[in-house]
Image (cartoon, rainbow, N blue to C red; front, side):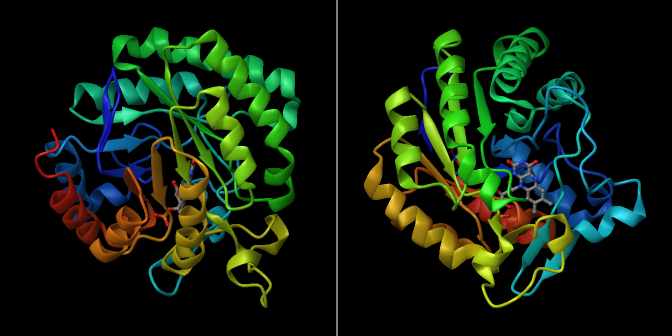
Length: 305
Ligand SMILES: Cc1cc2nc3c(=O)[nH]c(=O)nc-3n(C[C@H](O)[C@H](O)[C@H](O)COP(=O)(O)O)c2cc1C
């Protein structure tokens, strides 16, 4: 658990698997096990990170209501997934509205925002600051923390190149909102120096890792999603590399760390905790085995409210 002056983050967090509002995604909500998961999340006060919002609505690759785009999310063996979702969302105003409703229903949701550096650094920073203003206005005092997604997985090069932009963005956000609890979500493609620089700039916690580019997990194979950058691997196939990265990261920074990527069961959670995690995130498990995700949550988050 991570205790801050303004709030807390539970030992197990659910990352992006409950949608942009953080209270579940249709049609998963039709599944009894997923509904059981939602109940466990609510009853244990589990922290939920919302799916990423951008400043304005964005059409990525995957769109829930267009079956032709469903190919951008695939199942892999060992409870794995490959996705090139591409950050489809309705923009920050709609996402904040959905988070507000989730809060009124008893969910503890922390927003996740994606600065679109492809638009240029200044525009991305301006949009990020505008987004924070909107979260404050729409969520009021329940808005105490924000996760900045610096790790969109669809292009390894783009992630590596965004370090300078992300640091500038983080610095400006921290300068304008020093009291906001800021988390940065990073990628296996980021050097540890990036995490160390973020720590120096005052990041409150790091979340490692986002999905892992396909070619890192399967160096000998071509991704079935090669035409859209290869996609990101999550769940079981990503666990070994993610644990290894996180064990190294733990030695480089002393701030709170949310470790994750690849968790399939309680044993995997325990391995992250043994590696020094302050909290552990799950996403794919919640989508592939919601009943197991609920069991993990009830065993680790019991009594944490
Ligand atoms: C279908 C899908 C969509 C995702 N969307 C987002 C997103 O919008 N923002 C984000 O920061 N991470 C996103 N992620 C990454 C997850 O939050 C998580 O960091 C990653 O999948 C690794 O954890 P896991 O192995 O437990 O799934 C997504 C993952 C999946 C599988």
